[in-house]
Every structure is written in C-alpha cells, then in structure tokens.
Image (cartoon, rainbow, N blue to C red; front, side, top):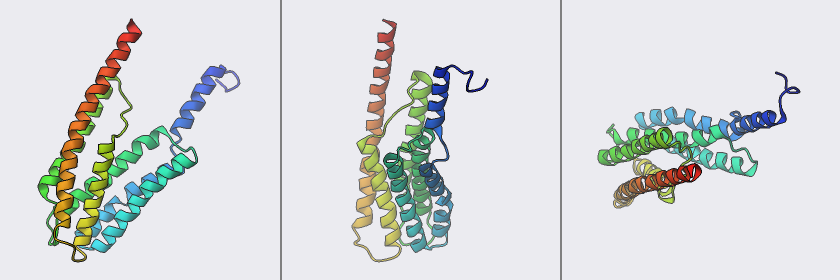
Length: 212
C-alpha cells in the first residue's frame, strides 16, 4: 500500500516509529565507536602499555559524554540509542575490570573479589530487568543516582589502577577506590532490588485500576 492510500493515523504511527528508531544518528555512531575500541584497551593492558590503555579509556569516556550531549542538544534521542549507550558503558567497564584483575606482572591489580561482586551486580540487574519485562511488561527502568555513582567510581578505579602502574601514587588511593566501589556495589544492588519491587507494585496497581 502506498503512502497516499494509507490512513493518516497509520502514516503518523509509522513516522513516529521510524523517528524513534533512527539507528544511524551521530550519537549512535559515536556509541558504536566506543564499543569498537574496547578490544584495543584490552590489548594495551595485555601488552603492559598502560599509558595507551589510559588514553583509550579516557577517549572512550569522553565519547560517552559527547554522544549524550549531542542526543540532548540536537534532539537525536532514539530507542536504539537508549539501549546501546548503557550496553557500551557496561562493555567498557566489564572489559576494564576483567583485564585489570588478571595478574600479568603489573604492580597494581583490581582485587578479584571486587571484580566478582561488580560483575554479579551487573548480572543481577540484567536478570531483574529481563524478569520485569517478561512478567510485568515493564520496559523502562531509568538508572538511579546510586547506579550512576557506582559507574563513576568504577571508572575512577580503572583510571587510578592504570595510573598506579605508570607512576607512584599515594598508597592509600587504590584501596580507597576499591572499598568505595565495594560499598556502592552493595548499596546500589539493594537499591535496585527495592526499586524493582516498587515498579512491580506500581505496574500491578495500574493494571488493577484499568480493570476496575
């Protein structure tokens, strides 16, 4: 059926869907670049080129800020971008944590207990989000302040560990980052479970009101 023969409502709906998806926006392209440079970070760490790894991580972090600013400034938000951006962030931090946990002769490593807890938290978030979607039909779950703080401290921890393998830092700084990350992982994990229960309660109440 041609556009001329389609009802106006259907054309508007199709235009809305196409506009919300628009996968080839500049912010989405930048996000894909951030995902593509993750292997270079891992290779740099494996080669003990911590200076290069630091620059790769900084560039990747800057692209995260850039694509978000472009999406807001020029109204380039999209459904695909909303999913790609957190995936790219998790991919970068997960790769950084794993590669910096494996002892390869470097002076400072991320403790394995912290890496396991951080990865378990991310797995828990993914599992709960999947359950919320499949069971309750909840597809939107905005990040919390604690979640954003946890990611920020994780990124700071990566930078500090990389710097500690390049220069002499205060001895208390890496452990301070490790225990700060630990505290936020635990706090944000419990907060995520609490928020999930509230979302489920709100969704069920809304369904009950619709039926009533």
